[in-house]
Image 1: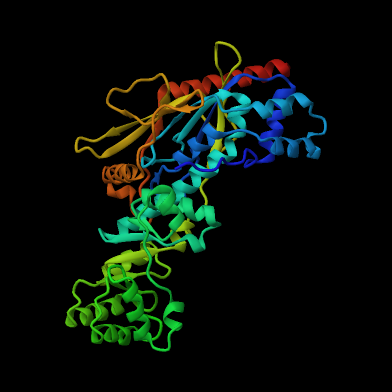
Image 2: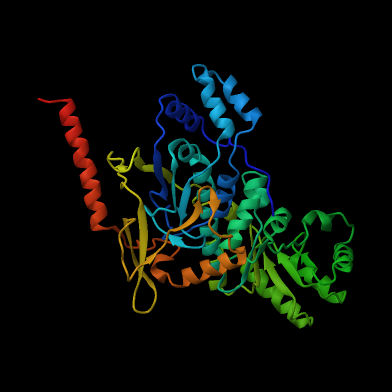
Length: 456
């Protein structure tokens, strides 16, 4: 489904001031940047890569409108920038190449999710959009995978739009949550845009709009005889169940949104079964997360579905991901000049990279090697593939359901010790010897260059 073009101004100002400085100083080499997460959040043993589809949409449609260029021209910071730069922006399109890890792939710290190569101005100004797009959806997809794991085969629906950080965040959170394993979302626009199954129940306000609780149940089920999930905790939960049974209603489900979900669900299940409503499901919501679901089921909760909102759409316990986008080489002519950040605690590796994943004899993921692009490891699976060339996709994106299945299968192959909710083990990721050698080479060149500038 075609989406409106994202504004080229959805970026940080310094991306555009750097672009202007590159232009004015006639620095126009090809360049390569890599996007990765420096460190996993607390209690995260893995991440589920997500957001690539929206990143590619943005890159393919990137352009500055007349209005956007005029806005920049009037900005005081560009007062000394010549007209040539603004003319350049009007014709700018992304013409580069992108390699990426497929959505639904488990990834770990320091591993490139995305590699962008192209004219340095093009590759520079897309940084902000790419980081926020991949980091946000990766956070939510990872949280969803954890919640689905906790549900132990029971269905989870994403309910978070009203708690998301804005309407568009709610739509993209719904997409990422589905990718991470949820069966659907309450967000109708996400259903339309991405083809997601949408689910809904009924609010307390509907029940309270009637003088009689039972009448609210009857009238709602009359309109939705095959889909009614009745909210039963507005007044007295067990009394509401009795009213449903006595009225001969057979709703698809009942929802518990408060109270002790364990004891209430047990009592509700007994009363439904005794009343002949064994097929009626019990749906739980209300400040749920992977820990609450795990603990409720461990205590014997009789729950069939979970609606998870705030904790999922905001990844509440780990609401930010330290995504970075680093220059790894510039190519002014034929030979690349490698770049690395050498500051303490934030060292980055130079050069284009590939990530190789190795499995143990049982087929489980065993360890990864971050290598130079040209290296070969026949026993390892290369994770990054070319998804965009000369500004256009190399292939159609797979259906979201297919990506969800890929994520599910990939997570099956990740040993349990890395999926623990508290204090997961560190998955082994190491740089190759050749990559270490390249870093040392770059470091040594920097030392020699400084020595020439400051001879004793």
